[in-house]
Length: 405
Ligand code: ASP
Ligand code: MG
Image (cartoon, rainbow, N blue to C red):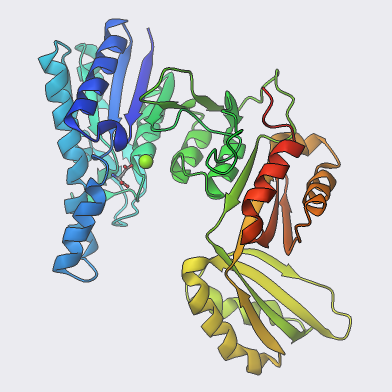
């Protein structure tokens, strides 16, 4: 007998019919003798709808009130599922984050979980009930309702699995696992049977939006075996774990990409100590996050400085650079928001040389110019013109043999 935490996302509970289908699945697991805690999202579209209502009241809604309201989407789905389970003869009880007591800090709209009281859940499980918990929410020390950030139900599920020492945490969603790349870009993309936490974090932070990043961090930290599966199709999904697969000796696990970045360059900067700080200090002060940074060696006592930011911050960043350009004695600012970042990710590259050259050769063969390069232990990222996104992803996918089983 095992203990599982199952999480169903918004599309999986998007209608009465779908909630009934979830109830049938849950009942089957329960009848097989396993204990089950179920975490639900709000019905798909509901959180957005609620945020829309709030904005009609207040241009920038008070965050405490916003959390009190947007947490209700999950309160509805958990009660509905619990009703259905009891209706079909499977004893169940629903709880909000406050009722469980998922204690968080007080950072409304992006709260972090501090502690989970598992007393009520344990008691219910002992009595043979399925416990249904509202995702995405908690309560702070002062009893205020908090939410965990968009997509936060994944984190609720993983945190519960960690607190309860569950055997596995299943995330049921509308895709049947984690793929070698986005199948909409490369139809030959293949579902991975397993992937390591580190790789998943890279894939997630690079734009594979299967799981909330924080949930993967949490699962890695507490070693929660995490499985992503489809709520609509059968199959084992993708297991996210520490162990590297013995069977697959793949060098690269996936190709990730990010269309949300933009590039800024300031040229002819005097090559003096403190210049990087003078450029990036004001950017940081404006709360703009910087991703890749490149500065070359100066030949003529001046240097060029390039970095990328989120596209949403592009204009703000450019305004800041334009303002400091003259002060710095720099030549000019150029800016490009028609770029994409394409990355190859794999723990296999730790122990293999020559991965980078394969990547660069592949892009060269396609005539794709590389504008920036950044590397980490398990990832190589390049910035290229956005018109090459599909070509870059597909040629790399094929060069690293990702379509074969
Ligand atoms: N309902 C919340 C959202 O849309 C949380 C979640 O679905 O995970 O972000
Ligand atoms: Mg989600």
